[in-house]
Image 1 (cartoon, rainbow, N blue to C red):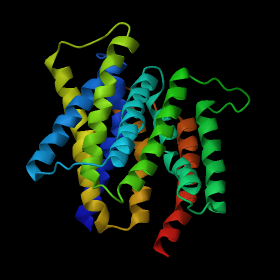
Image 2 (tube, helix red, strand yellow; image 1 turned 180 degrees about the vertical axis):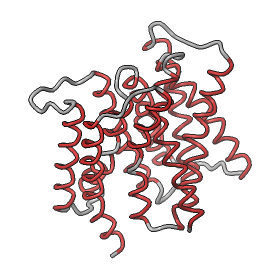
Image 3 (cartoon, rainbow, N blue to C red; image 1 turned 30 degrees about the vertical axis):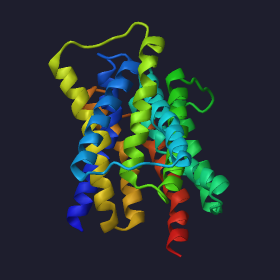
Length: 292
């Protein structure tokens, strides 16, 4: 049990750090190119895993269409808006906005999967929204100035929630590795023309350490950490694992302080407590429903 929690905590540290990693990478790579390159190396990693397990499966037309849509929306648009947003958005604020994904997922599940919408979810949503408003307004509730990058991060959050719902539906018929591999291949293919259309100018580093950082973070964040999480999540209580994942914004704060020398403000701490508290309040009842 201790070993499982240790590995899950490692995953949270990696995912929380990704916001700062992305901000650093954008200093040397333009966002569309960065999206395409990361997806390329993620696909190579997944093909390696699938080859090792001899795990290549044919899909029927319906599942293939669904995975194609997932690859465009849940992979490409999700990744692209993340990096476009981080060009100007603060990584800590971005992490806090993405932390509310479970709430939106709950609402989408209620609409499309007919899952129950509870009072806890509604109350938790209100608490989390208050926290986001507080952070974005930087503590001044009378004035609000939204960075355009944060709007892209909101799109990232929406596409992430859509990806969770679609993956949940697809996983009833298709195994997770096949879904992940094929959707990332679609996402990579779609990303290629955007490099030449959306990036003006195209920025690419010629330094080996920058490329090593790009490749390493792509494989560790989206490949190794995901596999470790999926392998260890079955050994622990689902509610406790969910609470662990809510620590990502705090990890982003600490990594921002260490790597970007960005001070942690009282507004961010207070806002994050509201947001994480709202998410926990909103998702706690859902865990109870699953266990009934």
